[in-house]
Image (cartoon, rainbow, N blue to C red; front, side, top):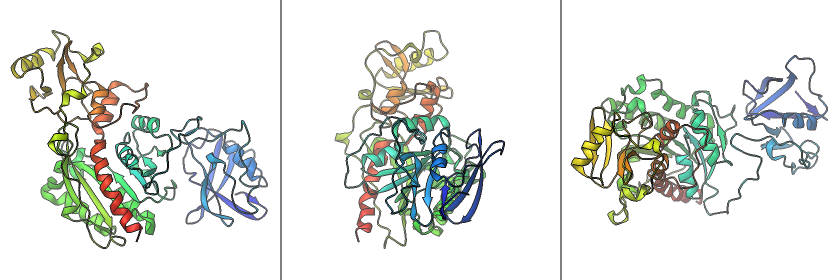
Length: 458
């Protein structure tokens, strides 16, 4: 514990087991929302000076990534403040504890941040709407809400490769890389948000899997969403936006959905049958991918006087485009083409001869399916693991798999969306297949924000 002239201050969010190889933290909870920490060297040979808060902060600045430290003054300043920003405390008598960072002084960075200055975004009418993302993946929900002007404060994802992609594209968003089971509001310093999103694992409820539902450990991850909501207490999110596979509602003869409905209602939200809808990317956006998913929107019952949320309407057919406008016309890398005589070339060649070059094809188990409707099959997480479940076309240069960039377009990601060069193609395909379609979520976000603002302005 460190004291400065009788003023006790606490370092919150210091819960990572591997703070640094040369440090060990002894954490003692003194009361809710306050954590006092004593730092010692690994060999316990010495303790940080008790009379120098500034020295302690400067020492912490050399700690390795991806750890983040927040500082709050228990009595002087009743709010948390990230050390990484080194802001002067705008309270009389507190400047000696939070000095401005001097030139060339080390800066503590958050995961996904770089030493380069953050891009500044123009202030907009919706920037006061805040969002937190559970099961954030590569940022489909985050991108959709950002497109509508909302501010994404934090995101949680356990897959390290997906986290790398998220951080590359959302450098200003705090990314917490850990399983949701280990995530806590107090321990991880989660800021209250207006909207909480969560595309919780769909495999336990998918007909493509074993569909064990809540008997699958992954199916129980939904309950951690409820746990985190309750941990927020009276600062819980005002709107919940959840996503899963289209047969989620009928899984286990409807018992799964009824369990989810009951848990959400007990957490203090309006949530009935009309709060869920199956929306298809091909019919509700301009993107020609046949991807049907269930979306669930719950409204906080102590803030909304009635359950009045409306899902977006289908997109007019005149605004939909043909799938071939998403494909490159020039020759692609040889890795995407099936060579003659290979395992998959012959069955695709036969199917193309029968159904034409303008269809999109998919090898499903032992047969090739043809999509002649001008749309693409559902992009799946395992489409990068071989010839199965991966959309295939024939261009002027041969029979090939569609590329990761083409897949990203079919999920609505802009051309400047980055995938780290360190990732394998299998990982990139997996990330895109696991994602939501950004323009579809963007349309839902466009419904959520006015609904929320109408309540906040009262």
